[in-house]
Length: 384
Image (cartoon, rainbow, N blue to C red; front, side, top):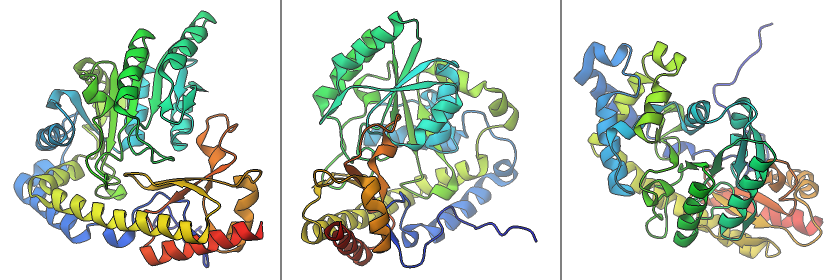
């Protein structure tokens, strides 16, 4: 008998409210608006929407995206952009240009755990940087890069999620951003900035990106429409200096394939130019703000032993556990109570940190289910 494969990555488990998945709430996905955008793109471009595309991405999307990023963050030119199949592919493409097998890549601690495999696939060795409550320590990070180089290692990049980061929801303060950029330049390390959550800001504007603060120098920025539109469209981008963009465009499979996801890229251009993107992201911010507040408020009532910092954007709460309790010990008890999460050690590249923390996602469930998930987590904590 042939195996039966699911349609989607996430498959619900009966009886479990899962706070482990950073996925959008299904009813927030813009099905009808995306259908309209696809029709508009096909009507405007005809056969050109279905043939091989330009390697960096189709002109209409590059034009709209450059203008959009300039508006929401800072100056960005079309020749500094490359359209990708999402932020993870952007990381893989940028890494293929920047990183050689055997290189050291410095990573924040904690940081986005699924980036580790992407970087290791490139042959990189990952080393966590010294960090404090504000993020990577600039001077200590530069000193670490220096020690590694003196030991004969090539240190090629620093990867981090500085704005509404995954898993902490934290954003680096402005002064820390500037100091980190200066330290990376002194250490001759390229910063890879994962800027996936920029437009999911709930309490005022997001801070300026490292890319913008550094004038585009020494930074490759990764972005995605997975969080602001839909993961299934498989579209993202990277911004970098023109030489890096040209090197990415010259990669063999990019050059052979005629761009990445060309048809959907033209649909995204139509989605953006029509005003549908602005309307949709405005609606998302309101809904995710409600979900953040629902989970944070319910945790205060049902699980007061957790140390929870409420983020100003993104999809995640980073919760500290009571002293002596580990995430790995709590997880099986929580799942018996019908709730799940991601243990903190997964967000450290060596698995050696984060034992006393859990990541809770509020993106996928509506407020009433988030409140119930908090109640179940509180019951599990009481049981432990």
